Length: 225
Ligand code: PRT
Image 1 (cartoon, rainbow, N blue to C red):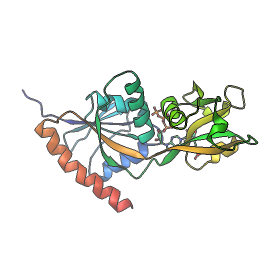
Image 2: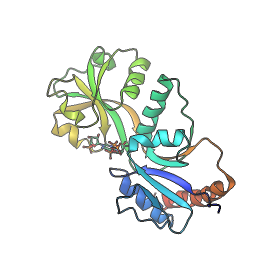
Image 3: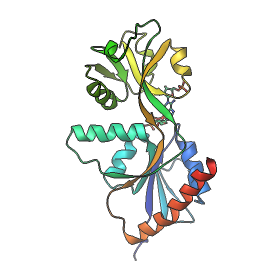
Image 4: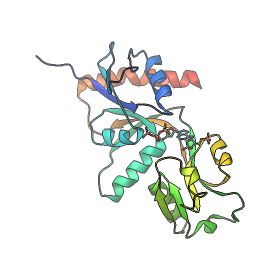
């Protein structure tokens, strides 16, 4: 018995991108039920499976060809690509389409009252961040040295508890920074969600599914503009 190839798409299981991703796929006509605890959800009306994972796992799953497509923030994607480059690992993928949700920026923020006079004011300081590679690239490009401590959450609290001088974290409304007595001083990366695709050639059956899906995604994005 031969099984029909199914296109595998990685999406965030739960978090800021999951509702928009699910809504996008549904608006593209995919019938899926991701309300249960299964991490691999079958689309019932197309040969597509949805793999529900942590955002941070999505770039690797696509770059390694485990998933054919993924929907992930550019921040997560770029950090993963820089991390792989550092380890001399390949980070091949195709950024198939930008998506108009998940917008945010990665910024450096300092405690209120910090005497900020330009990027050189940050030289030699320590930053709490989930994005050390993006921070490092910014520092290198601007000729400064910085230290970092890696935090996966609650980054904004780090300066107040003495863990760091400042932070480098995602900002959308700025309310979290304000609530924690921090001021944005440099925006270092702008991000939106993106649809990414494996750089491996797809078998013709999967390519045909993608050829059906892509114009639908682009149509939904256009309608939202
Ligand atoms: O847990 P997982 O591995 O799945 O990923 P994650 O920890 O990155 O999950 P999640 O759900 O927090 O974020 C998923 C993606 O949403 C991010 O990678 C970004 O691409 C995007 N996104 C958009 C954001 C924000 N906006 C955002 N504001 N991700 C996080 N934030 C946080 C930020 O870290 C800070 O704590 O929201 C707070 C600031 O928000 P404002 O509105 O107060 O500025």
